Amino acid sequence: MPIPQHHEIVVIGAGIAGATIANELLARGQSVCIVDAANSPASACSSHAYAIAHPHIGRGSPRLLRLTRIAFLMAEARWGKQWNQHGIFQPTKKDKAFDREELQKHLQALDLDNDMARPLDAGEARILLGVEQSGVWLPRGASLSLAKAANDLLQKHKRLTCFWSVHISRLEACNGRWLLFDGAGQPIISAQKVIVAAAMEAKTLMASVDIRLPLKPVRGQLSIFSIAKNDPWAAQLPRVGISGDGYCLPAEELADGSHRWIVGSSFDEGEDDLEARESSDMFNREQAQGLLDYREGDSTSLKVADCFVGIRCVAGDRLPIIGALTQRPGIFLATALGSRGVLWSALAAKLITAQVLEDDFALLARLGFAADLVAALAPARFFAGALAAPSALGALASNSKPIFPSDPKAK
Image (cartoon, rainbow, N blue to C red; front, side, top):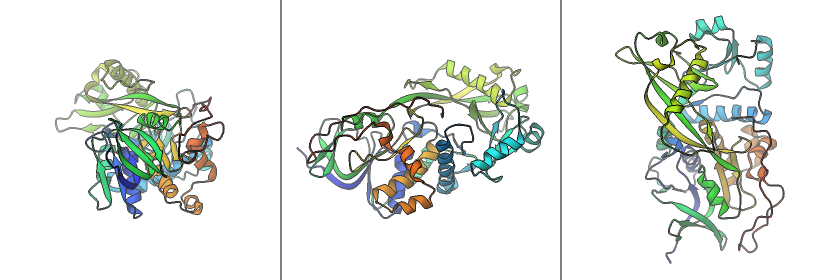
């Protein structure tokens, strides 16, 4: 049997979460080994080039609202030159009346000042943004390419070791360390601390140490539409991003006068099919009409030029799973990022690095992590009682089942 190569810290997964965590650890002077089944970073859902980022301002869970504000500020600070700030507009729901005073109070309660979010009536939005709808303007909202960001984070570094095209099939505790086994069942790496920054693969890896995570896939298809120069849609296309029932990026005018417009995305729970679907493009055409409040527009004028299909991973309560797996010392999780990978990966990098390095909680508090927010993200929230502790690092057994929250409001 080969002798496993030892590393103090191993990150499994080189998507946007794993890349960001590894980069943060490197910045803190640590040596990091990153392992991925693909032959390069950002091969799965993180190959997405059109991700958007903005603080959540809905009426969902208060913890979600607080967390996305913290995560947005961290993402904004982290991505630098990758941060394509074009602003995001969130229209008023069609069944709701625009109430400026009520909206302003709500935004103030979320600690969002006018620099981050402000109400606009339809006239103001038309003049400022070219969108004749009332809603909330998020001027610091942005988009970025997850793939480019992940690749930039994993540039060659003297303290970074990368294993590409290596599939980790299971973990096992042995003599105070964690062994990582490849697809052939051979232990190839040992580590003191293992950070699992994978999507649905995290479920299988955790099952190998008798931890059952409530994860499920969500298929999403983004449509890239082409609109002819003189088509009526051309006059309706937005010059800012819009986020509502679906989202879109600002339309791009091409050299021949036609436009390229990215709209998405479908939300197919429990599905992991990566094949493009015409039905998903049709769904995105309907979302396009709703985002612009242009129901009279002929949706067939939105010609499909390309698409992107990704499989997101979500937990039962729609919050990410980020933090130390205290029931299995030395394992940390960053999974279930859903459709907010831009935000949650920036947050995960700070939180997990602090936990891996056993920083004082005062540091996390300075970053905005109140104790209840750390608990809201922690893997332990899904377990009813304490799990059986490892006995002399032998067999690991669970005596509880995951709790599925009953009200998954936040998507």
